[in-house]
Image (tube, rainbow, N blue to C red; front, side, top):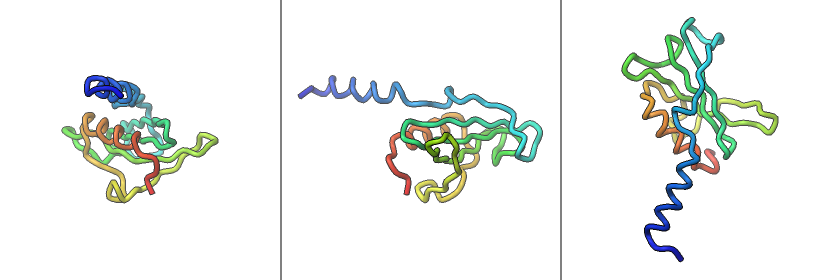
Length: 114
């Protein structure tokens, strides 16, 4: 059995592999309103992921420029938006990059959202 410093090390190792906002890659998004809209998709090891929008097609402001949606991936790599009640059953608007990272960390630790 390890003491507290050992347990702290294990916790840090787990979180070192978590994806954060800086791991997102934004590309132009043509399926939404607003020619400046960009979208990033990322898949987590648990089969869930996030879609993050920014620009005039997102529910966002200059101070909080991101909108996040939770997605669930199928085995073939396709995905669908899901609306878990944990997150008020909708997309999550008006976020900072720090907020996006916080939601990403929560979603990565979940086994099932329903």
